[in-house]
Image (cartoon, rainbow, N blue to C red; front, side, top):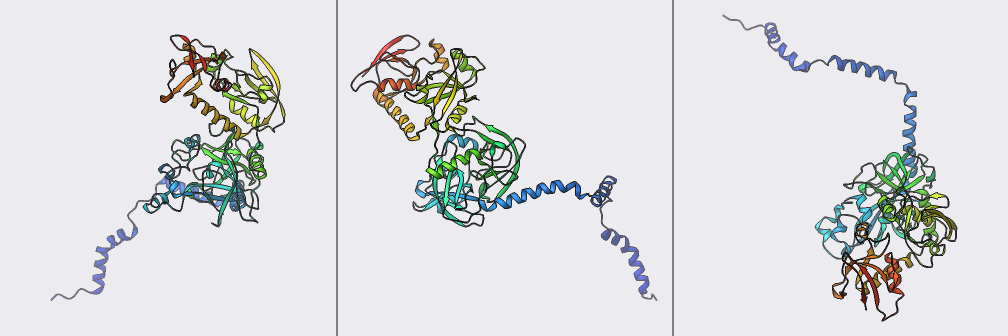
Length: 509
């Protein structure tokens, strides 16, 4: 008769069967770390126990500097929403920049901001109310509510909403704008605010640390850091007075108008543009220098406009091709005078078309934008020494700078356009290749670029070059307009025309 297996024998049997399985289940199935990993682990343990605080102290100090700058400036940096009436929103405005932003800025910002709230059917319907069309940044520069930002952030807005760091919302009033530097000043009805001091951008050097604060893509109070990549970046085609600080601090759409800061927490620039193919950060960002911003700020607060110098010339950029065409040294740098306005300071000083301005008050002029900036930043009434290159010689003439009258300048341009419209055709400077083909002297004549269908003139066609008007030779659009404006009402125009076949006279009545 078989007896039941005793308890201790049963447990022993289970131990034999289950033991290996249990060990496999509970001890883990992984392999031991490699010798390389074990060595790295030993090194890590040793490094942590021997970590010298003196080694990381400088880095911690720099980190603390960034923290303190961010804290000190945070209450000064604002988000700005530009609002327009719903019926004014176009399809372009819904998914891009506010209407009216200069095309030259669009190429720096790519497709711009996508504004999700404008994509919903509810927001697209209806003709009443206000909708957000743009988002930017700004910085408080006075405790009584004055804010510095970009002109393109506020341009064409019907209303402006400003949000402080605690999300308190204010309505803002535009004190003044300056499209030539893409700057604007706003005012909110508040006191006791924290203002960020404006530093001296002339002391900024390549390699200095730079901190940017703003609202990229609507993410308010975003802080990024980098270095100053370059200074005095000119001829970028962003504004007429290009003179930017370049930085690699991450700046994206929505940062526009926010401050670029040094490690002292001072404003050294106003973030304005990014060089990007797709609209996002690519490491090349531009800021208006604080010294420029400070002067514009003062003028806009004082008078609502910026006072600039003007001498009455239209400069154009020099190039080796243009120098060759004009018989000038190929390496000549400067601003070629395309036209001189009669009665203005340059005309009174004897400066002529085709002169090349190479120096103003001892400062070398290497481009047309440099000339505009040098004269524009000169206080009206000041006499400056202008060095010009003419007929192989360098001459120096004194020129007393006048006030740039933006309205008069715009009115003059409109009048010129209307004069051409009345004639029924438009003219422009003669391209170099056509000048060579027609054996024209440098700067000789103007070319017909368009003729109205309703006002066709016998004997005149697009591509003809007009050499003179009633016996007066013309070398620019301004010369041509000046000649026709001197003609009395009812008097005809006698134009000397040259094309590939002949030179002839055409009468316009």
